[in-house]
Length: 237
Image (tube, rainbow, N blue to C red; front, side, top):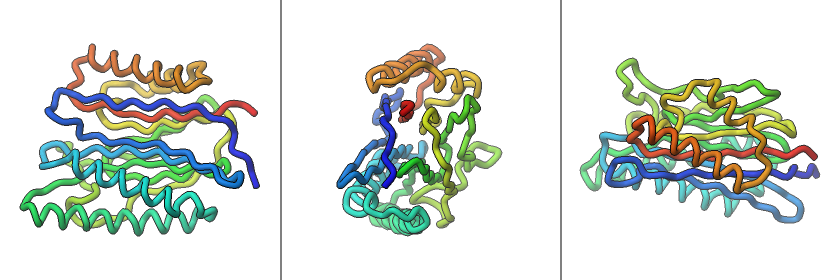
């Protein structure tokens, strides 16, 4: 069985100017009998709708529960894709039903990655983003599901069900992954994000500090939205 290379990870979860932080995130690593699997997920409750923080928190909690109970056991990425798709379908209608019972409309974006034995599986709804730095080239894996007026046209729990965007990529030793809410990337150029991911980071603490510097920069830029990010990198073997 392939061995997961050592990695470092940093997480950022900061409240904006709103009353409640509508972003939710989680990062988990499982290792049993030399079987390694990583999960990172960010959900951003939709602004302008009710209880965005409840929608995002519920989605993250359910995904983590699935990962811990069955997700990390499955080795076949095609089956993982299908199971995640089924789970998101279920969550979409559970959130909609909650909204009907309370007579409100709510929803959340969702961007997640799952890494197993150098294979990256990513899944996406909404306008959070997933970036991959590969051989010094920055790739935006996701596209923003937005209309010209800025309204989301694909999200979890609101509107009609639609399949999420999904993809798989083989990872190398120096590859780095960034998943972030729109509060993090808004106003940053692609080159700024590329420079950020290329920094000499090899420890969790350093990764956390690096993300904190971006948060401070965003505050200086006048960002009012919640700011969340997960930065994952692999050390050379």
